[in-house]
Image (tube, rainbow, N blue to C red; front, side):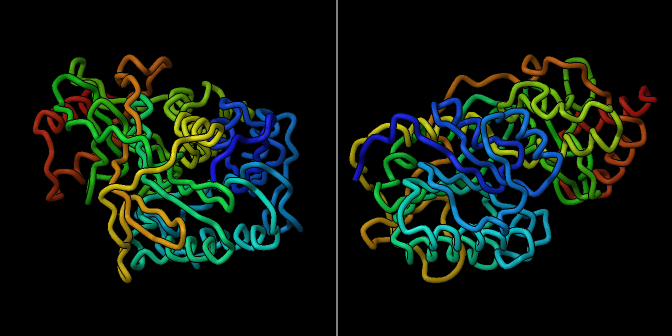
Length: 387
């Protein structure tokens, strides 16, 4: 069931955000024909970065899914995220996946591939209801599917960012493209003198601690504000936040990808952080697009077990030939050269304010979290020196 894609394969992107999935497919030689995004500011970014694509505002207003080789959809995660509302797949935002499934059902032929992206918590929330709902709907339409949890660090970026990629097709076996490569997760890195990222808006129940990386960039926080993570540089003692330009680079975009907002206001900065935090890692999408763009050898299943009848689903699984199985693969399909966080950052850092530092340190000291004593000392010292 393998075969080459058309000479000029096309992409239609729903819930496109600022085009992370589609930018990755573009780098692999795909042409974006249509993008749909509800956020008006994100649409400005799409219009600037994808000048040849038609732009639509609301997936619910699409009468029919246009012909395309690949349909991409990083559908809303607000109701499926561990730090979100947890309303599940029937929530007002994440439930919009039903519109996508309806469009697929109405189009009996094509697309060749469907690529869906979301957060790993969807595999556990409400007993895995979201992934069961999506895959059952795809199977009812004749799709084979495979999904896998993938970490953006596998592609060299110093951001710990795990996301579920689901690939489905009526005409191809999706397993070779998504599951055949696996290098296994690397050994846990000791802190040493590496820069360490953390969420300065947390501190009660978690830190988001990441050695030589930042925790996942996100569009919101426990304080209900879009904000960057902070970074501790043990060698200098500096505690600071990366710039929005470096945040864009941490997602694999060029710096200034979202710079259509030029007024420099706090509201504009917040919008840019929100859009970048909600984006899909471009190198991850490029890797997947390259896998879909060429014929691959037959998939050799090994170590697979049946999926559970109830409860959470595993981090990777597939359905092909009416057979459902868990897949024994890691979050690391490849291991590209790892970029160290400190030298990766090219733009001026913003020191964490005294108020923010003291607030985080206060929450941390009251919590029962385990943390490096030197980190707490560095926070206290930074607070004394910060304005």
